[in-house]
Image (cartoon, rainbow, N blue to C red; front, side):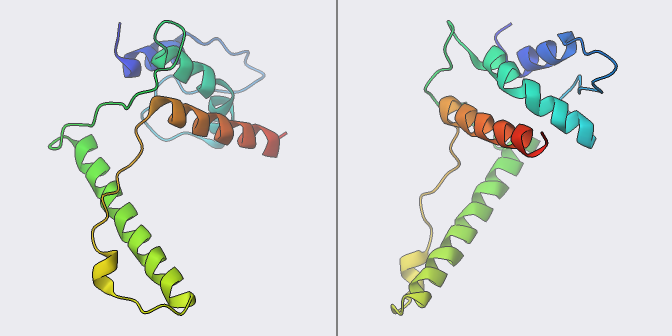
Length: 137
């Protein structure tokens, strides 16, 4: 099994939780309850490591882009477009606040894309899960 999604689903399905702890999601799909999110945050770093690791290390490379005509590809493109629009609005706002002349053409299409690097994403997940565990302790 070399598909990270399948490995993640297998890992989540194999976790045994005592009934006193609460529920953990067995699948990624669907809506999670608050207690499931908290439990999920405790196992997500290990689950992602299990799913993404190759020879004991998370690769320092980008995940493949989703097919453009798939639902994931459409959502990916929509999110990147939103990020570009927000970045443009932010940069224009900062320029206006600093008193510089705003030339809209300077803020047109940036060559910006979402980061798909496995290692950087894993670090972001570790940071988020650590924060959730600290806040809820």
